[in-house]
Length: 231
Ligand code: 5RP
Image 1 (cartoon, rainbow, N blue to C red):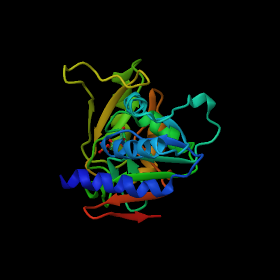
Image 2: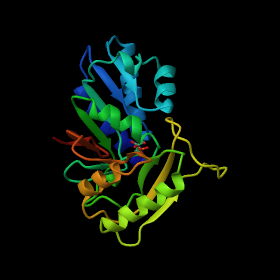
Image 3: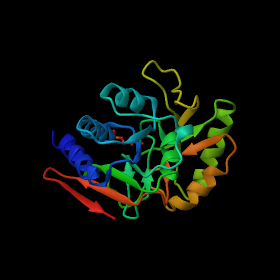
């Protein structure tokens, strides 16, 4: 499938940034999975790296492939993080959290010297917002927090937003790796992502949101023949 090839080619291009001795943040999702698999091949061939995972899903994958993981508490420096995105705009601003891993993803991206985003062309947007923005909230008071998030979206110029609680297939509320819930904020179009990010971060009960502003240094968009790198 073209989409899978595009994702894989983005991950192949990201391998150019990997160096022996690095501590590497491993992203979450179907694109980041290709990167973890490629890294595992290099580790099998003698590459020495230590990795830190952004989710339990990625931890299980890395462990199954023999990619060495270290506890976050032992990490003093993360040289490189490679992760996917749900949307990426021309400034490298992102929406992330489609896989519910945004909290650890943002902690690790923020702590990294170099954040590389890998994606297929369907993730490129002129303006963020068509993908529902994930907001991670504490279970305590989540219904009130959802109302306040809605008000903040309206105050941020979003026309008729819709805020829904993410559920599992069995309809029970999704619980993240951090034990929280996810509000999916249907915005269609976010006029000022940076301003909205600041407002959401100010709401008590919001643990983190999926707007990644000023964290990305490199964006790699895969295509059927290779990849385009934006620095
Ligand atoms: C998980 C994420 C993922 O990076 C994002 O959802 C993209 O996933 P995929 O590569 O499967 O499209 O933010 O929380």
